[in-house]
Length: 504
Image (cartoon, rainbow, N blue to C red; front, side):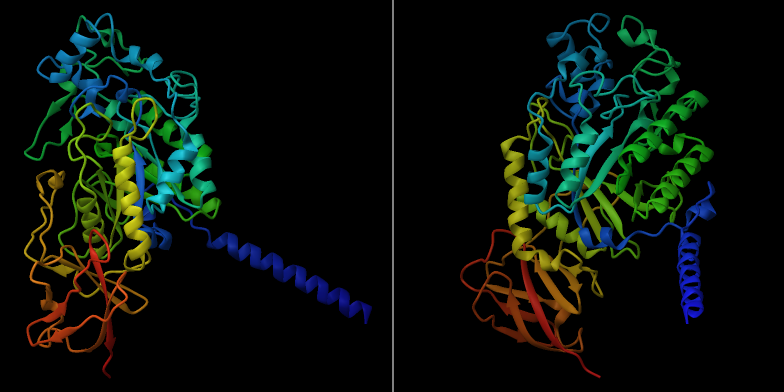
């Protein structure tokens, strides 16, 4: 009897070991080539989350300039740009006071990671985080490979770490965005009578380059460089990514465009390293990129200030700002209305996308009240109507209406918003939602896509989320006409639950 028990125990241990072995074998191993990197799968949490927040806040916030202030670091050196005149008037000549001299002024005296995280939760965001390094070469984390970092200079705080702890403490997924491929040629190191003229590999300004290293080409305004990045630049670029991956393990790693100037080998090594790190830690990891920096299928596509024209078969991301003109705080910052931000979220979600909304903290680290107000109003709307957004999936079509959304890089800067007849659809667990982006003055919401001639299922009941009374409707051949109540249930997009009786 005892022998049988011992044998049984041995077999049990062997079975457990075999299961562990099988589990290890199931862990994907990514090789640094495009074919292997196409093993990437966008995780369900991202498809469910729909809404995230990130921030543009760094040394570039300090000058308190006007316009698109996150580009101040390069524009201050361009004689034709308003930031150049602003700099001379407020800070003096470029050889006496250059970009590096703003770093000691970046003290972050009002930055509180917990307050930021609480606000992001109140806004209804499901993932959030900072711009880890913008184009200026200043890392917002405690870096061993880059002496120009927030832990050793400026605020002398590891901003990426503080936000990582605060955001994860509240159950949100953590995001870090990286823009540092732009550093190559960002500062005009060829310009005499400026502080960046003496640039070297250890300078925040990067290597000294010829004037041709920064020029605009092409009708779409993408940037090209000549010469292409050096081996030293590519090495440091990769080391910075590895630091962020190793030390903070972001759930979503976001890359700005222009990564295509780096060699394919470096890009492939970066992706394989990040994916293998996540696989080793059993982390459901998202990496986003802008086309054509990486091949389709190797990560999740991100569109800057733009959106898909139709339902896209794979989950995708739009990154846009709370302001139509700037990413970081500026004296003349103009904000989108809450209504526009909610409409954008609804439109993007209806097409299988997620929204990453940028906010622009004040140079001292406090998020201004007007921005807080918009985020809280978005959160109030999501608290009421979130069942049509979170965990939803696209329906048969994304929607209907007279507004044709613009597409292409930065297209939203030329988009004026939606009309009262615009409607978007989502579905969740078999439940259909029709989201009206306006409240027709006629008192009738007409949905053409659900008329008898278009949709062959019986509609048995309609509910307006936030309204407790009965909703009357008339199903016609060419439309489903919904009679609106006298009072709106909320201030923005209006969500209708459409109850259907499925036919055999």
